Image (cartoon, rainbow, N blue to C red; front, top):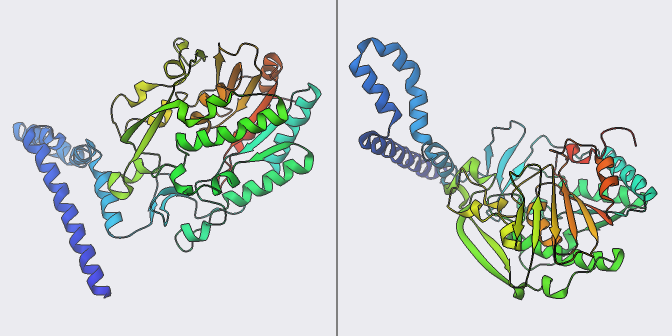
Length: 404
């Protein structure tokens, strides 16, 4: 049986190799080949032989990379051979295929994280804001690997401590009296947990972000007096446009489409009236108009580009140091500051429907003084939403530039 499996693997390898050679031959014959260009130089000048030897390998790699052929062939072979853990350019990380067929990052050398610095940073910020009568709510985003399912989802011998890290972080905040909300139980109650996350990426889908926002509107109303019209949270009041096979996520770009396929991404378009201005120092000019015209970036899905595009940034445009979404139809509403990372791309436009002004700050790219900025904005609530990984997000918890 073992020899049969090895024989099948060898046959599949040679089939993929043949496909690669055929692909290179197509480029060569069509005149699109860098290797053909180098051979032409050698034909015209036999003295070019040494330079040709130096350039041949890079030219061949360039031919394969014209359609990311090398990545595609590599991922296709790994899938056919049944391998579930692939090397990444980041030596500390791996791309791992979970038992449900989806991809995630894994850190073979990861250990339970010392979350005390993060706990201290959040609690310190809570104490400063309390002096200004500004409440702080820490929201824990769900992990792609469901809490309690680590062993069932991961390959043997691979461990993930992200949920454990999040548990201990939340416990430390709660012991100090810092408000917290854990979204993981909400997601665990859903019929298909995995369907709320992209297949080829670790982020939640817009459907997951919408679900999280529905939950948060209840907390915002009950505990902070921030009310959201019920029509906004009803999915029936949105037109949804699905871009099929449009997205290849962070893990998918490393393994190709043959390893785990591609993802769809859904655009939510309100059927009700909206009017926003979205502004950031990162923009050439502010964006004003409806929810779809200002807070969404349809140009990010104008064409399918698996390896060069990022359709996830259809929502919010991406990760900006600081940006403000002004809701012109709710001028008397409350102001929220969202301390965010990439999970909030899909959440922020929905959250902006709940307030008069939403300012998002991503501390990985923010170069101002956070406390001075918060003092100037004077929000009614500071909300943080982070997904704590297996190796931590220490850079996301640097809440002040100097002394408080």
